[in-house]
Length: 331
Ligand code: SAM
Ligand code: SF4
Figure 1: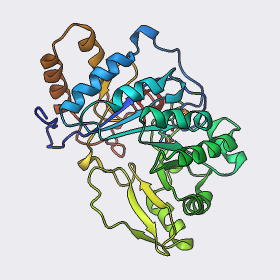
Figure 2: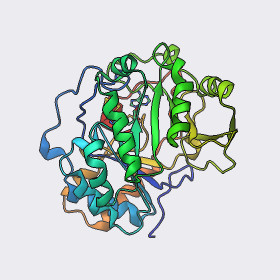
Figure 3: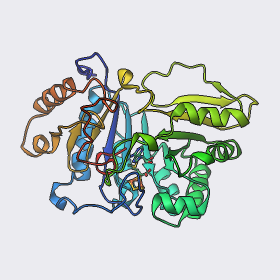
């Protein structure tokens, strides 16, 4: 590894999230309620070759976890080809993808064959009406099929993400915990963050990780996993009665975990974001396309990472929601 990537607070960057498209076939109200704004021109999107080159450079600097995301990453044509390219890169130990699950019933096997290690699937409700209200689509059954398909082809360990929003699905967390037990998956409950394109987020809509945990614990007693959390976003719990599955609580609003953050993001148009809530972006695309040497690009990346924000400041009076939403930044 040439010169590990560290920021000015001593945090080492090990985890790169690559958004491969801004497009999405869902309309989750907490992310993209009014649909996508006009797309960036195609020529501004990173090609697979450029993404491969970027990942190769990051991997040489100690980044060993790569997650493909979006928008909906399975809308990017031939994403399996990109998976195969990234899987071959030395130093990439963990290649994952976050998806809404819609295309998984047909694509899970191809993704596995291409070399994908595992998937995270979003599932905000097990009730068709609530699912529809939250995602803008009426396809709960397909997403469930997608989860089963991923399990069958061993895109494991499978994580299932639910954003919990007051008045929508907080009453359902125990049912979702039961789902984790039955299907032996890690069910992760995420606090609603101010990253929605509708700018409708309010503190009152946030259901705290603590409340979620309390609700689940009343029915299914939980035991904290006895492992160092490190840079993981989730606090992890297993079921006290030894049932399969796991519970993860991701509480960036009420219990920020910025101090151990090891993540950095690359948008589909080639901008590095050092935090979900960054106000500035850094154009890796310009460097990749300007004929810069590998050493120049590495120097540039070191300089960008050095500027990584200390914390997200959601609770601060001066907090301003970033212009780009989760679907652009890549969750
Ligand atoms: N379309 C894919 C999906 O939904 O899984 C991948 C991209 S999506 C932006 C990645 C993750 O971000 C999803 O699990 C989604 O639930 C989460 N997310 C989106 N907007 C969010 C918000 N405002 N607060 C918290 N999580 C959010
Ligand atoms: Fe699409 Fe994922 Fe955003 Fe939902 S959370 S609108 S599936 S990008």
